[in-house]
Length: 151
Image 1 (cartoon, helix red, strand yellow):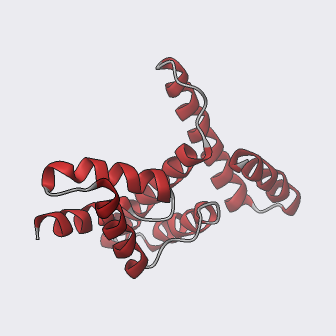
Image 2 (image 1 turned 135 degrees about the horizontal axis):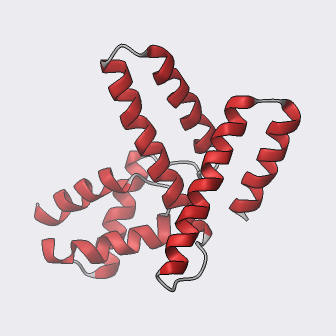
Image 3 (image 1 turned 180 degrees about the horizontal axis):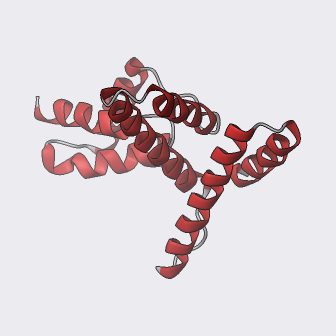
């Protein structure tokens, strides 16, 4: 379904002659196709929507890192281009959870898995990934899980 949304957006961007959106969406499609090829090479089925959300989040993270580097290097035009790409890609992600909601989800996941210490961190993160794919930043969430399990 997410693939269809992206493909339809490519057609709309072509009709609207929106070059930035068109090139970004083509890049997204290319990344998705590469991820599908990698999955097929490992004997896995094509990526599900949850897997696609993870791919999109990775693309956004890469662009955020590039923005930081461009800003440090004084390349405002390239940083602006990356920010535009982030905006286009972000449109296909579900709304991100607020920090309070993330903390509640983590405490619920800890209770659900019966996690008692750091050795159970993987179980908690796996449950969070299954329930909230695309809705939270798992880099930040893992720090919060670590803090909750260690303290």
